[in-house]
Length: 386
Image (cartoon, rainbow, N blue to C red; front, side, top):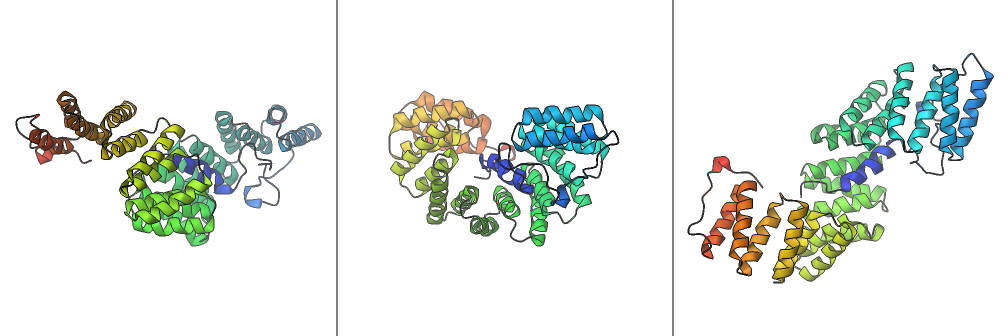
């Protein structure tokens, strides 16, 4: 498995928003920067027209601290109407929009704040975070890069850039930035888990194992590190270690369909097909649209010679992911076991379009079963890699 499944979705929230350790929307803690946090506290200067804007701004802050974001937004907008050049009002309004989950409004507001102070790291930070949260990774990377130009030793900025680059598939660049962050703070959990994910996604399983292990040591109760470590052990075919890590992830997040799916894969490789069935069924119950779990369940049924259940499950997997070559291949094998030649030929046709090499392998089995008159030899220059 060379993709991060949907764990990457968790990475967005856990790593990117955690870059600056800002509370998430709905947190009991106020996200407004404190004056003691100089790196993120814009100047709180008061405009010349004085008391009205200052009082209105403070009223907005009070509404914000009580999590009344709608009223806070109203107050900040009134301040801006009185003085459009008041940077602090734009900045606080942007944060209020973030906590109200009005991300598009937040982006527009922070862009206005940036026009007032082009070199404000705090604004660049939020623009990067919000774009990342919205899965807009190119602009996120751009803002994090600008932040780094202003604060080259910011672990948070380097980690944010690495997270965006990882999502863009720029794994070498992401690894470089995560390692820069770790050179500054070797115990930054966000940088460690980001590097863990990036190494795993790029197929560097042995280095990923070492880094992911460190992430579980830094935060033993963080599910993501245990999950990616378990997946990495699975890629390395160290199934007992995989089971140990995934079981810990399951303890921390028992209703996560992706964890259950990877447990199913591990039990399948242990040849414990009954247990694999249990885990794949639970994964499907928790995450019905996870095609990989349907394919795993069908493969387990096939091993247990429960052919009708296997065929139905593979068909469902193909409905969810029509390009799943494994589902097509295993459905063809299942159809052959049930002596359903037309079904097997239909899957053979699908594989010829999707993966000629796998279709060639299937053709040999079809020939042995006298479904076709001769196996097909695929010209190597035209083949697709699985």
